[in-house]
Image (cartoon, helix red, strand yellow):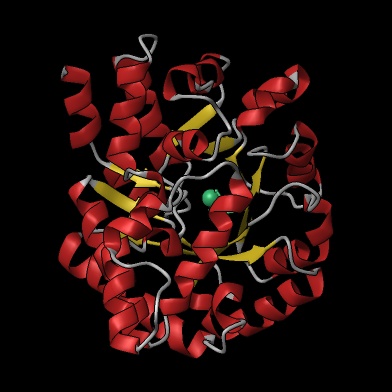
Length: 327
Ligand code: HPA
Ligand code: ZN
């Protein structure tokens, strides 16, 4: 109980959250009504009941469908501002949210619609909540590299408001190597690089993200534990892993929280963080992920709580002056 309180009340960074994954069913229905979009669900409860996933793809299908209600600048502002208020309640002081431009541009909704909203919501979060925000533009790995390059071009005018490039969507069959040119260009543009790897994909995808994309964090990475040499390297390099326990359970990456390998990753000396991924779909925000994991795992106590929270702040891309305030 003491540890649960420490986890909930301590300042922390959220380093793996998709802003589109914070779209709660209530907001989906409100935006559908506002925009005259008809939904194939009778009500909020019916939609929530559909959130029973068997793997990553079964989730992504609903996640992209949910995006369809996001049409106007106001919609994107409401989405981001609602999330920032929710994160502040969990004592998040720094958040580096992903956004998926291609899930919007494909519907004719461009950067000029969502970027002003994201920028305004971040400014208000800083002013009113003391919450620091760094946006990560994420490209969809199931689409061709050429589309990702075009997305990076479209992002160029907004570069001052972006901190990193990410890689998400269907992992299997879409290895990091497919996006070597995109990540090389993004790094030339001054963006930090992160990539989803080792969620459903094999340890080889983590290696590809490190060696070819030259990422400075791995998103998920839980399957690294299948490769002892990779584990040693991740520990030696203190490469941050943004692990998302409730996501892993909901997407059947692990059977339940009690069997999650996060304690082993920590014990092996890896720089592990706990995050929420798509909290509106997976049943919990960052404090829920932390407290439910600790409740399920007797091996986790105060030392691990302290390490996870400190890791989250250290692994953020915030300026060193900001980090010094938090750590
Ligand atoms: N994995 C891959 N793509 C995603 C995820 C995820 O957990 N969430 C949103 N897009
Ligand atoms: Zn993710």
